Length: 208
Image (cartoon, rainbow, N blue to C red; front, top):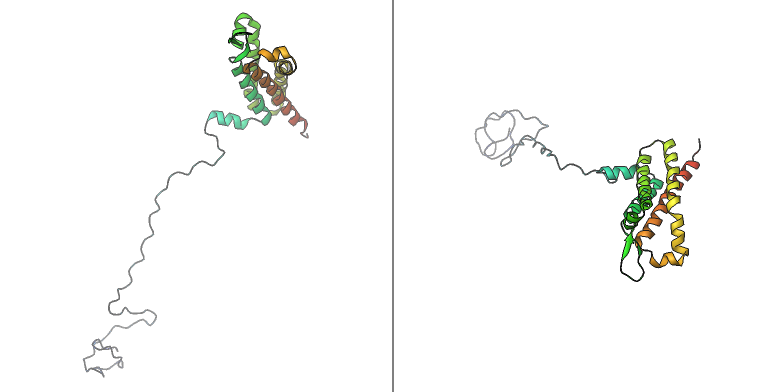
């Protein structure tokens, strides 16, 4: 037994402390495997509960995921369709830009101006719009249809692109008065044809 007055360890059935003579009091049995708290030591309490996991902000979408219809459309296109589509858009825009400048003046004429006097010029704009429409349809079409649309794109681009570009490069009279719009028109239709050829080449490399 342990004396509560001086802390002296006595025999279990001692009535008085051997050191200080204080009367010994009965003490509860102590589990030898559990340490009794000493003076000034607080008894262990229950373990604290883990903090509540508050929900954080929503995770950002992974990179590369399209957020709009235009992004989804571009992602669905092959490389050839993207080139043809970009060329078709450039050809449409170029129709409203200066094609030629009038000699000796600051006046320039666009495709729209030529179309007002020569109605057939509007066919160039219609070809550019048709090429853009074919690119859109090709992005949603099965493989067999893609090959057909690619052939149409090559035909449209070959009609309006290479001849004008060759004239711009090799004919001095055309080079003299040509504007940025006519250059962009020629390059745009060449891109339409090249994109269609790329799609056809990709199909020719497949093994069936």
